[in-house]
Image (cartoon, rainbow, N blue to C red; front, side):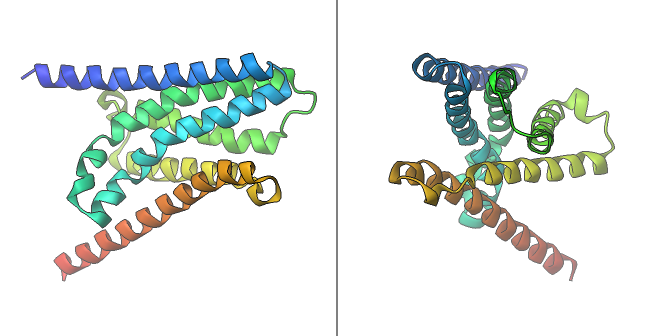
Length: 208
């Protein structure tokens, strides 16, 4: 009976370690090529943000995919916690690059930008911590639900803002670099709204 939880913990740990290691390798590769100054750090931030999003999006939209498109996506929904923790691990590299940018940039992003994305980072680790029972049990159920709902939607909003950096004003390569992530970001929001609507209608039907 104890073997299954142990296997699950090992799988979760492997996903987290892999997500972090790849993010770190990507950051090192970009900085080795483009330098550790402002431009190189910005490029590394863009690359690691996309890698982090590759973990966040299925964690965010997996349950909605299962609700809207059927049971074929249920295994993805059941892995939401593992995917979310892997996202938090990968995002640690991104957060380190943000700190480095403020160290090397002559004119770093303003305090409003820092506060906005810093809030998203806070929610990232708050959600990661409360995915463990010993932390989740410290909060009342209503507070835990509110934290998870507000937190995950705020992180999704932060990615939408991050990906909405005028991709149509530059080259074709810039458009191709941004557009798929914008489409994924908005698709995730739409899927979650549709899934919520279906669950609401179903609950009203059961009550009625």
